[in-house]
Length: 390
Image 1: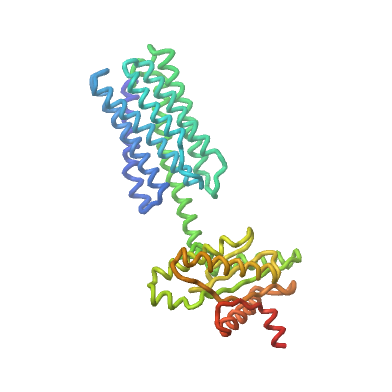
Image 2: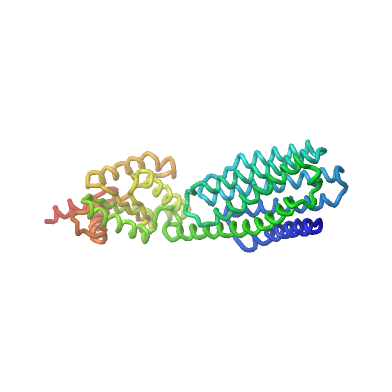
């Protein structure tokens, strides 16, 4: 039996080291969440290596104390770092303060109480079980972004590990003679080693699935958002706007479309450089987004053109939006980008239940080019142009 325990602990250590090497190779270029998970696994792998080595030196020696304490720091610290990765993958803040505090308290208490075998083993296993419970509870909370079933896989793995780890700590505290050493042939110790090996495999699968989910969300963002400004791209805007127009026709409310062209943008690129032009586009997109209400849609229509769909908006409210944007640009553009920024725009408001998005955009486009023909820096509405033409 002792050899079985030793073999299982060795297999666990090899598995953790393999994960530490394989994750960076499999994941390739990663974001902050995946990087934290990789470092967390590396820390846990190092912790198990040090724990295994500590069992080969004289028990109670300063070498044993140092290696064992560092191993606890690696295992608990790695778990705390993984908790921050899981938070990021669930769309939350990366903060995992309590697991990190537990890791620090565990390590310090373990070092101070090392001379008592019953204390250090029960202390370490009890706090590791508490730390894993915290991570499992966090994973069980509803995520803020769509995720797959990987979090429940990790919750299951952590729950199993909590039970055997806490049981192991209780055994060391209350029945030390039955569990006198790390390699003691006790059934709970054997179960702990078996569960730890299974948990390592499940954790690897969970981390890879979480990374895959994140990659899928990143691809979706790339497919729907303009990479320069962060607002919707034209294709995604047209799809969303079509749905909103259909809803407006169904429920009898109106929509406004504001088609915008930044004035003299080519001169910005030519005189100030393309970096300044990019900065201006980003500033302008932020200005539009900050002025929008819930349900309004902003997109970069192409080049220096933007389009805003105003939900439940008539001509007066669309014109009021236009005035807010112009007032903000007059005040903020010199401060934020160092020079004035203005635009020409055309407004079209849905006119009937059978109005189409293409028709609205055509009317807004005619009004926009009329505004540019009048000298730029103004907004015209398609309805007024139509009435003056007739």
